[in-house]
Length: 337
Ligand code: 3EB
Image (cartoon, rainbow, N blue to C red):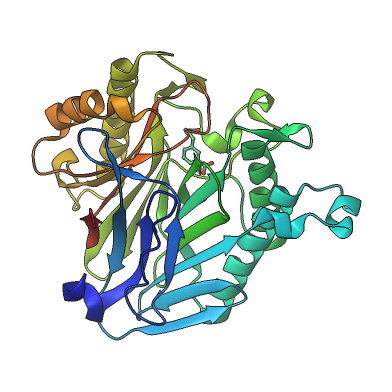
């Protein structure tokens, strides 16, 4: 951790319950997600995701959003307990607590970006407790989707077409945690997967409001092209494929990732993104599946790909694995501790 200390934008720690890592330094945007990391045997442990940059940094806290930025990129994180929104005015508005927490989080994030003049979201990460559980007559992931979309709309942001890349995954218990990267300069280019229906066009069977995310984005930061692949699973069209077969799901996910890296290289031909250069976070429903998933990923991605495994609930109950990835930015994973 020490070697990044002077160039950190922010850090996220993934830990099992009962472990409380100290923030790496004062002021540094930091969030703990009670989502255990997994080693290659599927054993539970801790891991850190560190975002760093160059130049001089400013750190702050505004309306619940912790942030760190240099001249060109901003990292921010917000954690809201949905129980906090279980009150009469939220009920009177016909919203659920998680829906309101999600909407509020997005409003505060977009407010910060307007205030600090980082207009372009590069990527969002969303961690939602009990994501496939149901309350108030609606699955919690669907409640989140309603609040997120309302947050976008109320902030004057588009909810189709050029929307940010994202992940939304579940963990057992804890606050809604959202972190993000934003930039100045050129807007990122949103990329869709030719093998999949755009998530913002999912049919109603997946919920009253479509999820607001693109399959990937490519951004230019200084002289670098940066690629953000959204959470990617075994979905073709809009349907989950290979229910119950973790190896086949991993292969389908790899086919989706390969398709998107192809699209990214079409959009940014000078970038030459390749599967082996990416940095991957792999969400695994059952820790016992890690060796099989790891074997399949290594075979396809090679030895150079950086992989981090986390024990997570994928937002559809029939999915066993989901993979996100980044290229072109000095993301660091610190495993263990
Ligand atoms: C999918 O493709 C799987 O709601 O932000 C992946 C990435 C998924 C992002 C989100 C959800 C999200 O629909 C789930």
